[in-house]
Length: 114
Image 1 (tube, rainbow, N blue to C red):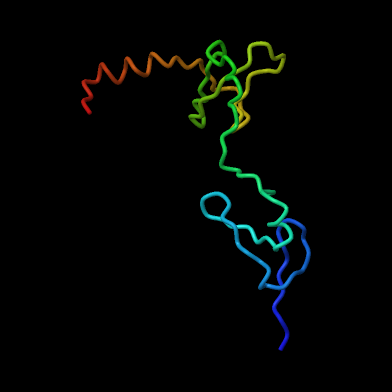
Image 2 (cartoon, rainbow, N blue to C red; image 1 turned 60 degrees about the vertical axis):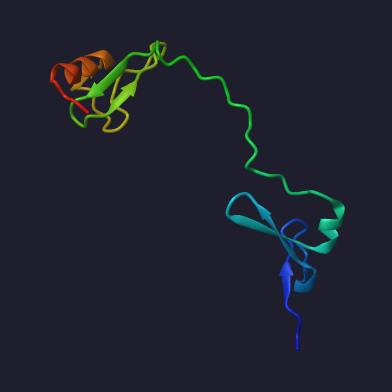
């Protein structure tokens, strides 16, 4: 009877299944490592470790628009030389400036209670 063989996820060699061990990686996955790769030490990086976050660009300076054709809200870069058009439908005929505070005022004035 032929012995089952499987590929090691690190060295990509075909080895006997008796030499393979499944090491958990992340929340729902595991990695098949042969005995040679396990002896070398930890070679699999944990992808669940958090990387430092990039600084957030200041989006508040960008004017917000809403397309009355498709109701898509978007920001526009004021330094751009391009004409303003809706990124969703591509039209520019029914665009208007969107004021976030105006929406809050409308909700509060409608006597809406949560």
